[in-house]
Length: 209
Image (tube, rainbow, N blue to C red; front, top):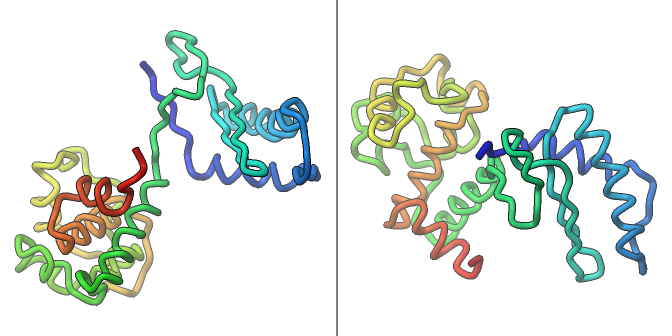
């Protein structure tokens, strides 16, 4: 199954089109009227960005409305439905930041702490001088967008961090980086005393199931 990725940028594009359609969605509207607004906004985005499939959920006056377009798999032609799973992508960063804020508010994390203070395995590395806040704001010194291919597994990531050398003085430059925010979330979970997935599920989102 080919999983489609609905990127944050495309989501924002669709949202912007909803705002720019000029339709007023307040008050009472039929499903057909709502669908017409959604379709007018979504169709151009899918065509311009070559998006194979998209799912849209809207809550209007407390009532949910679901609209599905295109296919969930180019290989099989299976249509998008309400049950289609999309990659969460960078939406997860919002939850990671919320977890860190919760850890700080509960007194378990100080954003000024150096990364190696929180994770002793990093002592003696560049992270002796990089704070949790700098990791969360992409200003840790130039961590890359993604892990190198030879370090992109749970077993190799820590080793990569230990040998990594900053390009910039920490705090002086911002550079969007998945490893940076990933380590930020890992450190927050360390302070919470449990693995990231466990604190996310049981503490931050206990009623999400």
